[in-house]
Image 1 (cartoon, one colour):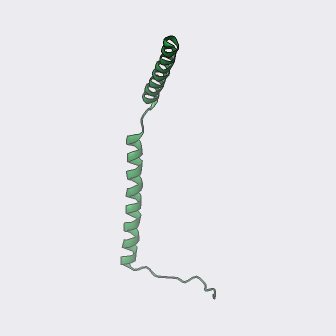
Image 2 (tube, helix red, strand yellow; image 1 turned 135 degrees about the vertical axis):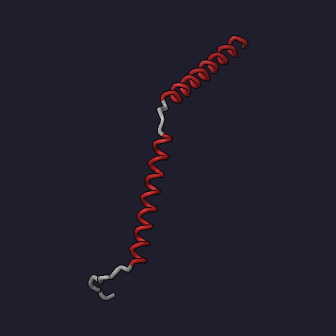
Image 3 (cartoon, one colour; image 1 turned 30 degrees about the horizontal axis):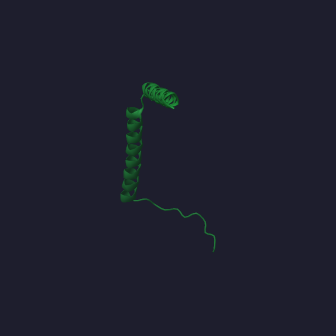
Length: 73
């Protein structure tokens, strides 16, 4: 394939407006993502504590059931 040098293209008003619209849409999309991140960011320590409590409770119940079975045998 032959190599061509850089070609200078002139942009007309319509092309400039299209590029501007694409840029604005991209900026709006990024802003929307940032807003969603800000809304969804929370301190999950409460959830982590709840999850740990549930796991501890389940483990305790399992041990209790094992002991009950041993006693019944």
